[in-house]
Length: 147
Image (cartoon, rainbow, N blue to C red; front, side, top):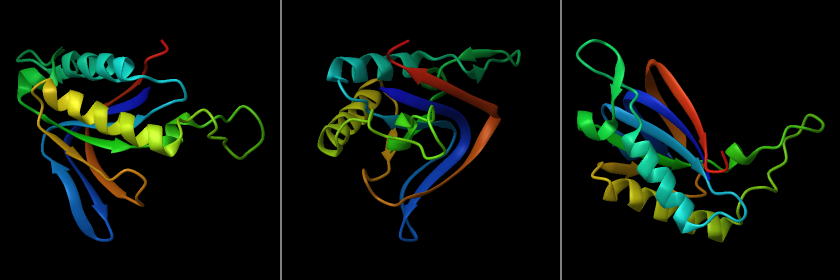
């Protein structure tokens, strides 16, 4: 699985002008299931993100996790994280999991983040979504279960 994590002061996802998910301080997590990914990889990624120390402590150092701060997570499916740009000018997405498998793993991942004690809001898999956020820092981190 691949994830792009942003530390945010707020984030929101809208579909057709209606808000379907919204958080205050916490993490914006864009996630993509890749071909061959399993629930075990989703579990490991969720646990790692929950413990990721990217929030400031009292001395201003990145030393606290989202669980330490009581923050929330907005989890949004993002199959374009599977983009292969190695040839030509049009990205290929064949490395992404099939839509059915991608949706299953996306829902499993969001549930696992919630099981870590983090309040979770989500987008809607496969929908045309408008995502807005305020990146805090900015802090943006790429994670891949292959590395």
